[in-house]
Length: 129
Image (cartoon, rainbow, N blue to C red):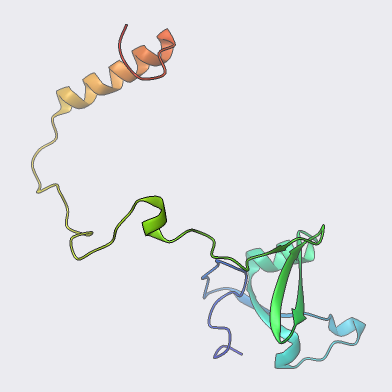
């Protein structure tokens, strides 16, 4: 089962530790303890399932996750590709633009004070009155 499900199978979850084998059709209702009827879930998503927050079924040998109202979820990517939201990832993405120089505490404190002053005066843009 760990070869097929190395992580929690809940859409978007990558938990590898503290996972449980869940019977899709409960064994008390006649469900077999076989790979076709088992799915790996982390403890968090396993508890949510048993609380009725969502349901799992199998259609055409694929897991289908639905809300308690019957809406399917997890079929689309959880987040759009980075390019669609204005980010580009390249070889310089992880290069820092800070090289260990000291913090300018005066500037930092001025910025915090300006933000607080703007908050209390009602200016949402942060500009001082």
